[in-house]
Image (cartoon, rainbow, N blue to C red):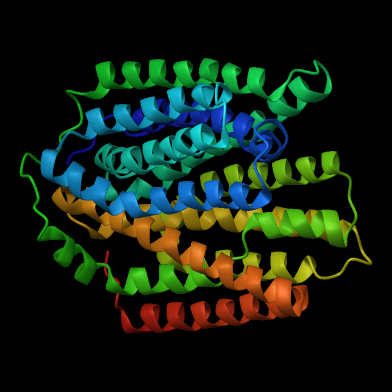
Length: 392
């Protein structure tokens, strides 16, 4: 895969992700009240729908990576994934029952699973290995700016125009269509200018990739198991710090904003320092966790959200750029699918553990677990770096 117009495809696909994230984040904050208040589903049903959507997305990412590697239809799979996400959101607004909503919300996550390995392969094919951190940083920055603007739009429509949940869900089609328009423009502009390996992979390639990425997957797994999901910070801000809902929404947007700029800056830094930047991610996540403990100092929850956004931007860009640097081009779609699946299930398992400890033993016990896993991750990262176990 050769270099062509390095930043350009990242900007085009970044705009695709920007509008998709605007659409997604318009929907995400209103799904819980829509399920419970409008569709009369219980909170158990809400948990079922949320868990089913995420589990489906994680499980399909490896399958999507294999499919992209076998068929080499990267553009088609990217388009299919974004299309499913675009049209499933307004269909959620038309849901007469929670069963319908469960199907459409899960379809949105299926779209994400299908498009992600193929899209990341296209991004990694658009630049030299030496600047993949920059490329993924640009893409992540634009993606996260959509995550900042989406909740603002939803909040404005709810608070100032008093629109109902269904109408807001219908309106998500507008940024969704804009994302597909940018994807079409990217396809027309870059289809013949990005050289993808003609050789198709087979299912046997999964074994090769797993062996090649073993140290990376180990790091990713432990990092995910010790991950403090932002939902726990949101709950802590409401219950522990007693902030109003609108303040919590603003804190969430602070995290997304720092996420965006961290990806842009640390993506470039990754090209120079490599995996050393992951120490920043570990430290920032530890600081975020610790600062959420001290409810006597409300300003600390601001810094907690800030540091959470910073670490999110660092690890999102770093892992993806790393895979692009160490995996050969014909195996990258498999590698991205495997990475996203392993990391996703690790975060899912870690969140269940943190949630259990929080519920049964209290928030301090949950944070103690998180900090312990941070230390383990740092130790493994040091061992990997000193032993030269990851070469790129």
